[in-house]
Image (cartoon, rainbow, N blue to C red; front, side, top):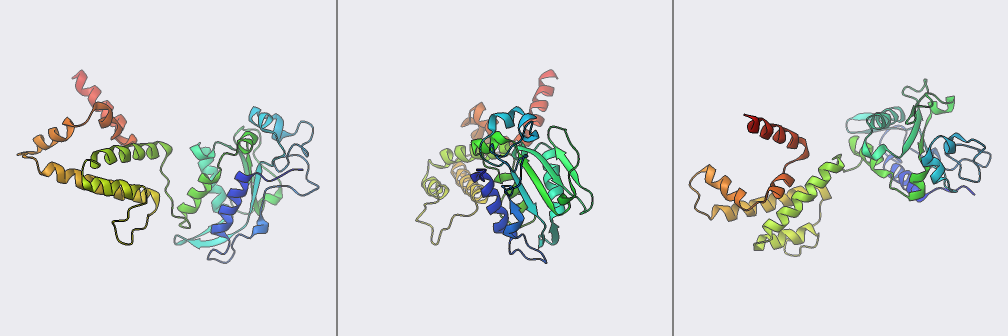
Length: 291
């Protein structure tokens, strides 16, 4: 029979963990978050292969759905809520509008979502459809929002929580970050390079252990949020590196710069440039070469 896949159950659990019993007049109840349609449900993303119908739109309109059809349902319904967080009231409508905006912007963590059927105001029903097939839905979506996921995503078991984590973070109910995958990769590269640099001295050994969450030399040390810990530890590494440089006999700023650059390869310099300014640097270099 149709079953609820683990990755959508994980999304359900995430939302209930933070929106059930949240402060406000109406939290999100477990009975308001569903994956598998009831026994009479036939056709659509709430159904697995045992309940789809002939020419079911949730199968035939995308090769991703045809290739991913299993007994797993591939949809999530989220019911109404009204919670206070981050100095404002957050509702099903504002949640839905936020998710649709992320999908419309083609955010990396939305690309397994096929459609969202929702109401921005509790009256009008709209549908965002990645395939551009439909624009509305039935009136039940005034009080619940429907998410359809391409079936190959549920078949592969891909984690669908990042988008919803970002939402919970944006309203202050979850400590998280909203960095892009590119920024995460850049941070990881800088972290790695600094670990190598700072590892040349005893401070670096402590730094490395702290980065692994296993330092025993710092009293009452507790690992912080991963991103904040990485940033804090990079500051520690930079301080140690600057301390090492301060022991050298540099008489001016230019000598200091040359001292730093002398130990770096072009690849290391490029890796240290944040993605947001890399193009500006490339444009400026190109302008100087032409001049």
